[in-house]
Each structure stands twice: as C-alpha cells, then as structure tokens.
Length: 301
Image (tube, rainbow, N blue to C red; front, side):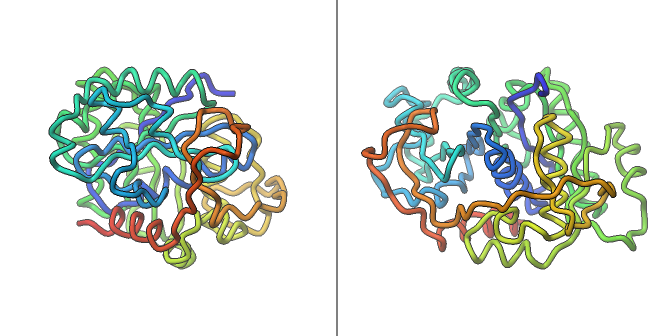
C-alpha cells in the first residue's frame, strides 16, 4: 500500500470534475474495504453539505475550526467504510473559523482512516493554499481545455509555495480525438500523468441519480478509469470491471465484484470506525441534495 494516505484534490479552475473525482476515488477505495474520509476543505464555497442532508443546526467543519465541536461530531457516514466531513454554508459562521485548525483535523483523521481526501477549493486564497501543504500528495485535476490547463500552473505554484508535493495530473472528460496528447499536456506542466477519465454520459446521469458513478454504472468507461486510478494511486487491490474501456486499460484488468448499492445509504454522525453502533442520530442522505451539491460544484465556471 502507498505510504501516502492524505490526498488533496485540487484544480486551478472550477468545473473540471474535482468533487466528482474526490467522491469516486473515495467510493472505489471504500468498496475495496478501505476506510475513507472525504473532507470539504473548500471553506469559502462549501458543497459537500448536501451529501449528508444537514439540518440548519447540524455540526460542520466550521464548528470544529471555531473550537466549538470535535471532529467526530462533524463526521457523517455516507455508506459502508466512507464518511464525509462537510463545511457549513453560513458566512457568519465562516467568519468565526480558524483555518489553521485544519492541520489538527487532518492529523486526527489520518489516525482514524486508511485514506483521507481533501476537496480543495479552486482559486487563490489562504484556505486554498493551506490544504495543499497538509496533504501527503496533491492530485491536480484538469480537463484538456487550454484555460483549465493554464490555470493548473497556478495550483502547481501554490503547492510549491506551501511546501506540498504534486503526485501528478488527472485529466477528466477526455476524448480520443483530442488535438493534443494527454502525455504532452502532463509534460507541459512537468508532472506525471496519473490517469485520464474519458467523457461518459453516465457521469451526468449519476449526478441526477444522487449516486457515485462507480456505483451507478460500475462497468462504464469512466467508472473503470476511476477504479484504475484508485488502484494505481494507492496500491490497493481495487477490482476493475472488464467491460469498462477507460483510458489506459490493460487486457488483464481484474473482474469486478458486484458493487454494493450505496445510493440512499444512511448518513449518520459517527466516529471513524465503520463498526460504529447504529443507534447514533441517523439521517437519510437526500438524492436531490447530493445531485445539487455535485452539479453546483462541477458546473461553476
């Protein structure tokens, strides 16, 4: 298994598939039996709250960073082996937070989970830079579009200034008839190409269904690519369906086990261990809220 367990998922531009990548990498690893936490580290423009159908008085990362709650209080179960730590949406509460407290949050989650994914906000701000230096490695997410690739250079510079390390580039929404090779894009950015996620109509359908793509259509090309990326990144044996033809697929891809239906799983306040008692305050994850969260995050210009 990779020695890197905390990953920051970052991009220079919004709408390139950063949140979708976070959710599907986490879900693929959770299905493989790893304990996973995904954290909404975009403090200013939070979008993971919809995943856990929070009520207005629910505890979020805002409360933790303000010193009013523990990280366990703000941790919500999405499905077997995977939890989310959402940020709040109130500007008043945001003003009370201390972003520097994110270091303690990451350290605590690192000790409780096998893998932690930090969904980092796009742009340039203190809240954006901080997670880049806290993670073991940064995954740079971009589409092949020139504007997105150009903005990726800013994220590379921010990561360098924060003392972080870029593991490599993940290109999303790729097409076989692109004007430039994917390897050439990575070479221009001077980072390794970790994987490519092909354009797949099922990705949008999965959003509206409120279900991670790797569960919604496990045999599809984008799902296969996400599973392969999760396996290559971590060294975990993540089964890859032979029916998927994601970029970089090998002829001897491991057949997939039947994927459990994680849609509609109970989202509950929980400690890290996946065996937490079921008598905690459970709430049903709302599909509409999940869809809205991803759609908003991935459609912003």
